[in-house]
Image (cartoon, rainbow, N blue to C red; front, side, top):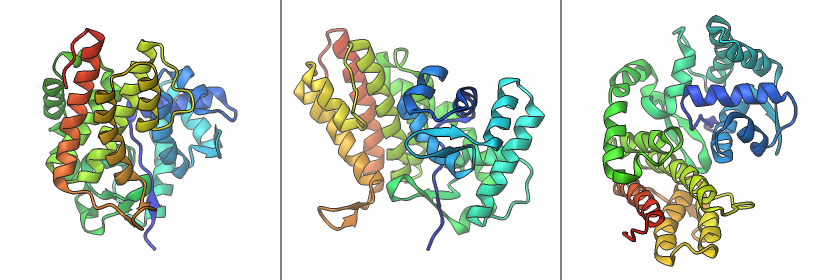
Length: 296
């Protein structure tokens, strides 16, 4: 049976904020508790919890709390002690590498783990929000990181161009950054990864849009359920259906076996590319209606 591990949906800066938040709370905490403390959306916290659980930074069930190792890391982050931060990351990184049976011969394990999902391709996205080890690519992890990190600025520029007037309005860390990651994956024909990252961006965007519109999303945990609440508050049906395409495709990529057909959906490269484009056009349309412009 293949080992599986979830990887972070955020970059290093945002991830350390979440760790510091759990450390400051120092008790069993809900997504909302951490979200309010560190200033990121609950879906962003949720998207990183699988990784933090996997490397022993947090523990628990519906509510999570910081572990002893996590507390030490959180204090080091809070007091900006770089050497201590790196040391505690290496402890957690080694646990993950042992779990995956990845040969660890480089010192810079922290950056490898944090950036692995976005840049390296050494782990492939599987169904159910998990990642599978790609044995053939492990020796090339660092080469891929170096090669692809140069494309980050270019991909985010392209995303801003596609968003148009919406670009300066939306949250950079929670919307533009994951869309940039999605675009890089789509260009490499890694459709499932593209959809997972773009789907996270849509989730965060809907959270922000609902706050601006004064709409409660309480109890809504996915794109489709959030759109249902926004439709009840007056969002035009055509935009809702546009967004639900994104919700259903994301579910197909992320939820594993579909009970309706008895197997998991195969996600094509074309769907991955289209998903990023539709995500950008959907966000542009949603921000447009706030200014009285009805485009789709």
